[in-house]
Image (cartoon, rainbow, N blue to C red; front, side, top):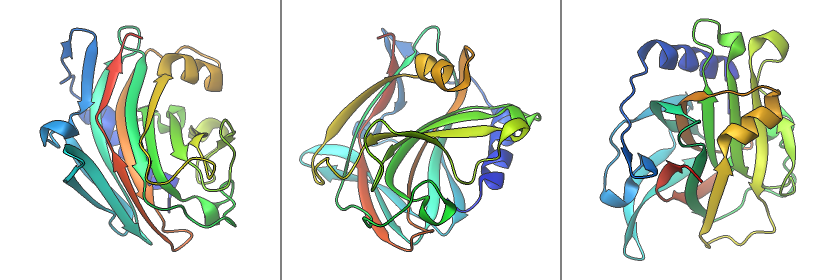
Length: 225
């Protein structure tokens, strides 16, 4: 990702324009209803070049396909989500190919991922209070590794933490389902209970390593457990 400064501005805009549009059906709060053929409420944000996002049929199911060739742009969904009601984010994803095995993901030149899903708790005009967690499909970092984003400001300027959920040990071309308690993860990473998040985003990016990647994302939803 080319510049976290752009992401900070983006987070400010989220705070100023966010509307509570989500509706809970039972215990499920749909955020990305890709299987219905809809991209409602998802908007593009370009950092460097454009990753191609489109809905496709794959094995009889509608999913979101992302193709990146030296680009870094994402799709974001602005919704204020009450984590006291639905703290668990659920999704599934798979990649067609991995990036290089010589990428250092802890520095700017290696801040690329075949797939990432992240949540943002905006600080609004006080952007230095913005907090985010990226769940990534890592190329070289082991599953479970946590580190600060190489582009993120430190200290008073806001933070973004990276968590490797998948790595080179996971099979390309295979769907994996994820379930993360966002309320718990935010508290663990930032030492405080953060009740609301203001956006969910998806990104497949290869701008720093100048590579290519193709990934697929299934439905994204929040639940009570």
